[in-house]
Image (cartoon, rainbow, N blue to C red; front, top):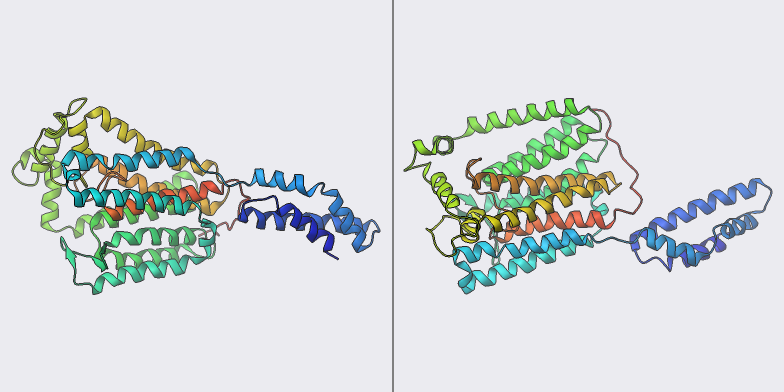
Length: 427
């Protein structure tokens, strides 16, 4: 018994290209044939006759295989890939506007960053994200071990440790993608209670805060809170979820302000009243305002004064001054469309783990985008938050390429049947 069934299933699978789809179809067909055979057995047929009849009832294996192949074929989001490519190309603009592109060392580095970013995003697209769901604690441990390594380094940049491996200098920000994957798994784990999630979160902060700049801590908290909100929304009303998050945000904001030293408070005062501190902490805010107001629709080309961090954190300002508000609008529209395109995947995916990954990815990407633009136009305090794919730097580009690549992976498998849901138990 089973020869007819196995032969039929193998013939169907020959016409399905996707490995992930083959496993699903194999289980699905075996289940349907088993159910049909049991019905024929109850009608009085022998085991072999019942199975043969059940297989015949399934129809042509070739036609069935072709139908399944079309139904479960992996998809490529060409629009998202195009927006990613355009954003990576725009990353050359701050190098041109600041003159760094004329330096062979910087030009070569930027080309390598471009190629590595594209390779990471496209490579991740072909990885089955669903295989990561059961490895949350392993990923969490790897992330904490990576952060722990910074405590033993003797190499510092601007007062913060860097982990040097060969020619590459790692920042603690590189732990975010690993911890992001861990949290997506945690929030899909029905056995983890609220207090356990809280312990995991605060324990990770103990490792992250001593070796990280404020923007990295900010991005980590935003990422976890947004993913936590998605989990809460399954159990509570919108009002209750919003209330809980608002309370947590106020608590963290108060904690950050209390921990701020006098220098940081003076910098914050410069943001609130730049005119009152024109020679000190308000100087850069006034300079940015002046630089943007002088840009015009089509920019000033190579004219203008030196702008600190014009190829990194202040890339949007340097591009606007160099190429004008028209180019700035095109660049910003591209990044916004990329963020919206990633968010739109939520409505196309049936897998709850995939939705959680997309939620965290959009949160990480959007937090960088909106904060950088906000501080560039004077709406938020200045800090070292990069503009995704535009600011010069290997680590920020790789992190954002990882984010987009993961969303592309989720989109690629959007037509596959959803994994059996593991709904969180009430807290």
